Image (cartoon, rainbow, N blue to C red; front, side, top):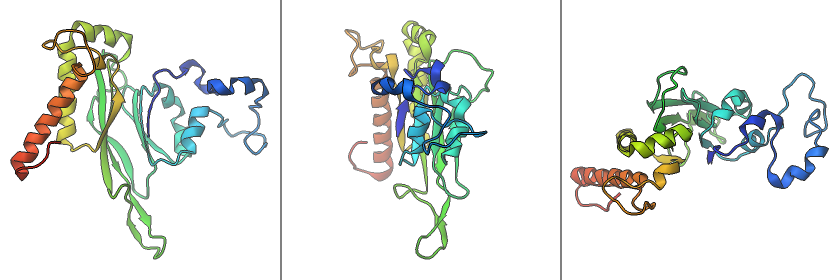
Length: 247
């Protein structure tokens, strides 16, 4: 599952924001009892809509961009048997349901520390997810846990043009943004990433310096570097394995 929290009501996150269709029920919600009508007592209120959706989600892997509002509540994700991993900016996150000895860790991308407040034209990170071990239901023998026939996978989560400041900078310097996207594309090929997910924002409608004309997605900065990445991957495949279809 991939989720973009860019338009989430961040200031009301801890106050149980509701979907618009449920607003009419807000006056009738009792925040002092749980779903079984029992008083919360000393345990925290687990009524947040997003957290409850994730808690009951059947997915094994959750990728999230612009996830800063989730960071203070990561313990709730852990309570829901998810193992979350945030980058230093807290704006990108991957969480997974793991077996014994499984882990989620960042292996590439920005990692300069939480005190780094410099503008990032492209915020991206590559995460490695090792699913761990489980017991065979029939034999009770411990064996590697696999998802999609893979014991381990690597995913890239990215958001282009971080915030209004980043959007202004990329309009002035599209070349720098292009270099950032190119670096991300190279690292994805290097680490053999299985899936890429993110929010392109303005990079989806900003034309490359050489394309000219009215910016469209087909000639956008983002699509330009995606095509570059696919071409390089195709050439590498043909160089190592001979004649084969393009990536």
